[in-house]
Length: 206
Image (cartoon, rainbow, N blue to C red; front, side, top):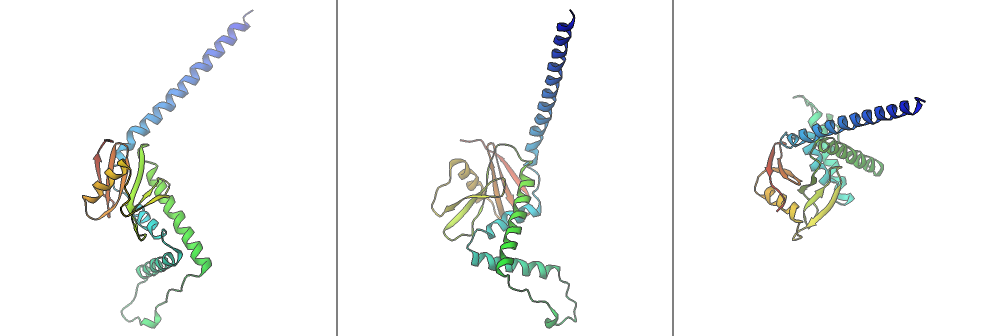
């Protein structure tokens, strides 16, 4: 005769526990969201700035991309090589040309590294992210739009108008020198210089 009462008590306990878990989850998510806007003001890492610039390297045709990758390889080897004062030029290693297989693997490795770096940075930014604007090296284009996964969504040709919100970011970009890129959010615009410093502007959608 007491069995229905036990069932009801058990159901109530389950509801209470479920509600506690829900409230706990909401509280944790709320703390994350509140702390995220602070990330807008923090300097961006050198790796992140490099990733934004390197992404532009991969937007050209394969001939130009190959040249750029070879130049990057030469620069890295030069930076990591310590040349003694009595070292002769003949003793220096020459950088071999990148073969077809090597080119594709190097291109893919660079792309994966870029995307990983961008994702690791952007995941701490506010959820109202719109896009990243960075200068574009493609002939006839002046800027491209990057998402928070490191993908170029669109190349804007010279004379082509940007959507209103992105155009606000571009106008802010034009006001500053030595700009790496601009991050556009729903309520903020961050102008990031070549050293990673962030100038955050509170600007709502007009």
